[in-house]
Length: 191
Ligand SMILES: [Zn+2]
Image 1 (cartoon, rainbow, N blue to C red):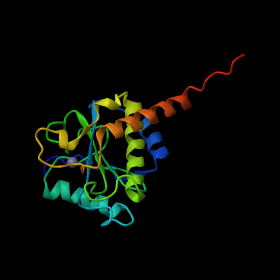
Image 2 (image 1 turned 90 degrees about the vertical axis):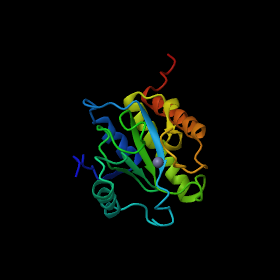
Image 3 (image 1 turned 180 degrees about the vertical axis):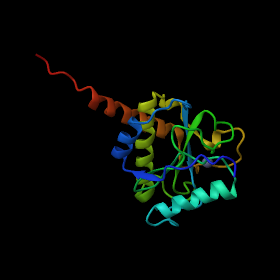
């Protein structure tokens, strides 16, 4: 197997993920933007309880032993949690044009067919926006640099599904960054 980079295999709530990201050091590799994906298969319906550690270990077997890749995407995000797969501090394998420059975040679901604005899909969307906001804040990434996998000229994949709209995600991340920063720098009371 070709120098498999290993997985972290830990899951976090958004606030735990923020603490986790703040103690990482991007010394050997520093990504300059984020690429958003959806798993398509499995769908949300095929994972009624979200992704378990067993699913994550199955994904490791798939990428390492079947695809024979050196790594996979960095995050798998479902309606319950943020799973760290490939360490965020090393390059992953997820978008042919951008593996060496971008982080890859996989959302559980098929957002051609499943709702991204209601129910479990909405929760996936919210966890994804939280994850993008946290990583953008820690790395100083401009949310406008966000890309969808289907924008990669070297891919024919309609990933993520068409109901995932880039400008809406960017707007939501910008809003979330504003409120994060408002919390960090409270307005001083007038004397
Ligand atoms: Zn993709």
